[in-house]
Length: 251
Image (cartoon, rainbow, N blue to C red):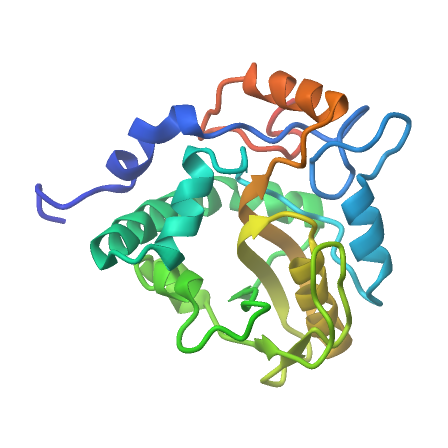
């Protein structure tokens, strides 16, 4: 790589303060998404809803970073696909690609150990709105040859209803024979989990095994005293590329 070309480190290290580490599962942490459940519950309301609405949900969700709605990281994850400026979209795609690659390269073994299974294909969650053309997250993946080589487009928007806290088995349709595949499901953001759970269920009903879902950013839930405390506790821990939210990585 030429000296004037960006590196994974140069695209991620300067922004480390914009990342917030998701916590280990435990008291006050959702047992699916690592978000904030209501007091006395193991699972947040959104995950309880979306996981129960599909036949074959995925329960191993490994977000790279928590992000505050309309914060700096959320801006990256919106701008890489929706900015009207192509130069901004390109720059944000590179940042997203570097973060995704660095995380998966560092923590693949953590995910495999937690799932007790490796993956042989990486696929992405399609848009719920039927976005035309190549999905922007697939454009991100094209910047990362090791991920691109393992990537396959396996899903398209289906007839089922999808929305906030609304998942469905037919929200997406499988476009290829996935029988016997072990898939890592990647998405840019996780809010309620409706899209991710719908995609996971469609794949698993078609004969694949979804090893885990890795969203780049888990969007902080709406403000409440409980979520505020959760966020403050998470922000009190400095993000470190060598750790993730899976035990024993953070143990």
